Length: 157
Ligand code: NI
Image (cartoon, rainbow, N blue to C red):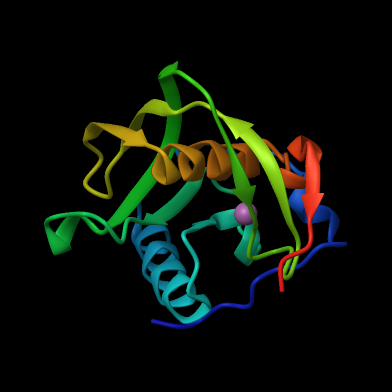
């Protein structure tokens, strides 16, 4: 496992669309493991593969409120939002934009379908912060950075 460099604001790769994973191979597993280490070190909520330079539809989300410790890291391969409801407006940030925060409106509840590392289809229901993270990471896969959705920038000290 290795900690990878998180790509920062100003690099155009963040604006590129990621490709579907067609085969979950050793490289994909390595990517997931490296992303986990990287996210842990950066102390973030979520990380998309594009942020470590891999244009693949892969992301991980750290759910600190998960009851079961093994559910704390959600691995998403080729995720798709299949349902969403309600709205929430709250502060959002991104590891690729250190020190920048803004208010973004997102759905309150999001249902996501994705592949697991074993290639099985799994459905997740995220509420609040996790719903926000699902939307944020899937946006990354489409080359959309959160700043494009910020309604009001906020100074956080
Ligand atoms: Ni981000």
